[in-house]
Amino acid sequence: MTILQPIGTSGCGCDRRDTAKALLSVDDALALIRDRTTAVTGTELLATDHALGRILADPVTALLPTPPFDNSAMDGYAVATSALTGQGPWDVPVAARIPAGQTAAPLSGLQASRIFTGAPIPVGADAVVMQEDVQRTGTTIRIDHRPPPGLNIRRAGSEMAAGALVLKKGRRLGTREIAVCAAAGAAQVRVRRPLRVALLVTGDEIRQAGADRSAAQIWDVNTPMLRAALMRPDIDLVAVETGLDSRDGLFLQIAELAEIADLLITTGGISVGEEDHVKPALTAMGADIIFSGVAIKPGKPVSFGQVRGALWLGLPGNPLSAFITWHLFGEALVRRMTGEIGHGVARRLVVISQDITRNPGRCEVRPAYCTGFDPHGREVVGFEPETHSSRVAGLSMASGLIYLPADADILPAGALVEFQPFCPN
Image (cartoon, rainbow, N blue to C red; front, side):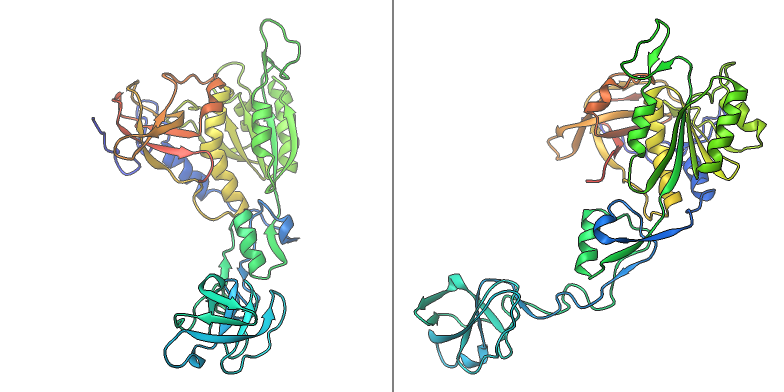
């Protein structure tokens, strides 16, 4: 088996420039997004169980120690180990019964309390013997082996100390984070306001999926695809429009949307053809186009800038190009604008299942799916033999994206490449 080691520091070759076209590398484009983007201002206070998917504006600290008192980790019997003198076995009278949620009477001398998981440990007891490890006869239990002090006891504050930092500012609240907030006693959390996003999809040739169309028209993939990507708790999708395929019409639409959005996303109209009107319209209104064109396949025309107070992300019009550039650049942009900490979903090395022959020069990104593991325990991915920027039929099988190095023309089966899953594991 032939293994190609990752090329350079980024592995996928994304840090290499397409010198023939003077295009930015993927990493350079991401760095510009990072450097030119700040988080939106404005926060709100939400009930913790209504904050799923939101970004913390303030850190979360523990209100009280967790657990708040010493409690039993098992159903069993609480005893004082110091009262078990001499050699066992010991016959111990059961003096009390302590369900969870009830206070416990103190133990005195050679006594046991029947105790249930989560119930407070009675004063005087220092161990809990599992019910399976005793023999009970009437109101007496027999203990054969001396339990060590602390056995099966959850100590107060052993999970969280009072005032301990449990979640940092900028953390996205998923189900696990909400569980942590609840355990810390945080009934409410302060989160950043949702990011206001407007979507403008261009192209006179597109029609709503399933609608009547002429022989020269196609169904609109980008609108439902990107609307779905933007329907999330930390985003307020303030407008979804179909662009007018004229420079003057787009000028007015972009101007209006830039007034109501923090982020304007467009698809199509950013190449250099006579019918590509988005960039000319932006230029006419004095937009700051930070970059236009990245050394990536597919998705080379992807662009980023600022127009009248709103940031702008220009995605290509072909659906697969729009999908891939959204995942690479759109997700990174939203994370920065919402103040989310971290770097998104981490890439990992995987083994390709088949040979790849390609034209070098640009980092190529392909949808891929896990097919299993090789004899060395490495994850193997499959993919379509070619990437076409307009084809999305294979996306339903894909679980992530593989990065093919910019300077590699042949990658044999078994080569290592970087893989970025669509969702965290």
